[in-house]
Structure formats: structure tokens, C-alpha cells
Image (cartoon, rainbow, N blue to C red):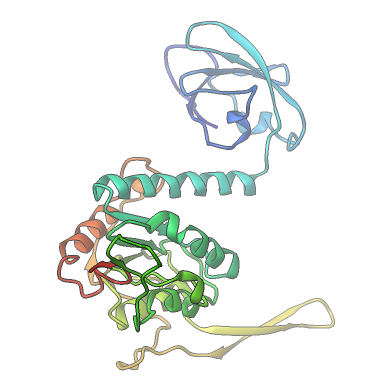
Length: 312
């Protein structure tokens, strides 16, 4: 949970946010925005109290809290605090859920949204798992690699996004008039309808290679701010004394232009800056609605619009 430290109108610390699936939202705790944290482990909380200090050495330990409800009643609950890494995961999941809801709102339900956390196999498997849930029945897809630190899975993602149509199938007794293709026949999941990608200055390494590839291959519009320009393959080995030597082993260049990706970030087709105040905002994201508008504006003339599903 987050607290408003200098909230007027009452004692303790005002609860300003409760992260879904976190300790404060657990059954039996049910902390709510607008309630006040009055005590931790028997120690009273004042408006000037460093709340983080009160939770030192409490991870996974039963920790009693005294809560003042909005109606003036008090209760004692027991939480199992989590570490900073888990808090970061909960915060990330909250941010992604909010971007998904914003995309749905900005596009009137026409577009799906997926954020790729990292360019590694767990994130790719999450992308594959969530692809149909996010995009099934939608006209297009927003792919977000903002603040993605990199990895190596660009080609896996592009294999999903660049599948060429060579046939369609009609199931027996199917009267829908939809020309489709069985996903089970494909080695990877496929999204062949319109898409746009969001990137920013915190997109690094393989997330930049993906942004370059998405733009170079003309898969769809690239929206946001230029990526960082930290593209190079490295390798390393551990020394007998425990030290580590890391060396560059491969440079990356854009096909066609021969642009060296090192120190040359992927430049979006549509440049949209995002102020730091929007980083964790639940209801604001200046880059996302622009990506939605750009994708929707070109969707009717996009040859990929019918993709794998087209009525006869």
C-alpha cells in the first residue's frame, strides 16, 4: 500500500493506494483507500513517522496493524509484508493492467494491449499466453516495449508478428463465413492483423533491436521517444580470483541503411514525449492514446486488417 504522508484531517497515515494481490489486499486485511494506518507492531504512527522503518525485518512475518476506518471504527489486522522485489512486481502488474484498461477506453474496445517486460523467454511465453486473450476479436494490437531492459528474443516476437498467409480453412459445419487458420498448425502463436509499437528512452538493447525491426520491416507505426542506443552483444568469463571480464562480441546494424544501432536509438515514426508525472499515473499516458489514434487512423486501409479472419 501507499500512504499520503502529510494528509490533513486525521491522525496516522492516510492510505492512498492498495496494490491488488498484495498483503494489504489479502482476505482478512482488506485495507481500503481512505483508511488510516495508526500503529505497526504496537508502535504508534504519527504523520512524521517513517513508515518504511516500521516495517524493517518484517518480510513474511506476521505483523499486526491497527487501522482506523473511514467511519471512525478501529480494527487490528495481521499482514505478511513482502520484499522490495515483490512490491516492484505488484507495481508493474498494476501499471500493465491500467495501460490495458486505458487502451480499451481510448479505442472504444477496438484494440488490444500487451506490454513486454523483458526480451527473455519468460516474457515471450507471457506474450504468447496473453496474445489471444488480449487481441481476440480486436481490430488491432498495441505492443509496448517502454522501459524494457533488453535480452535476445526479437526474432521470436517477429516470428509471431510476420507470419505470411498462404491458405485459410473452414471447419466442418461452420456457417460463420470466416476464413481462418488453425493456430495449432503454427509453430508459434500468430498475430497478423494491424499493430503498433510503443518505445521510449528507457527501452534498451534488444528492445531497441525489436523497435528497429518493427519499423524497418514496415510492420506498423512506431510511437514514442527514441530509444537509448545501447545495442551491442557482449560475452564474458569469470576469472580465477572471482572477477569478471566482459567484452563486446557483436555489433548490430540496420539492414538497408547500415545504421549502427550503438548510440543510434530507434526513432519512432510519431514522436510523443511523456512527462515523469505520467510514469505511474493510473489515468494518464500521453504516448498511449497517440499510438491508439495513429493505429486506428490507418486501420481501414491497412492490408493486414483482414489478416487470418475474413468473412466470405
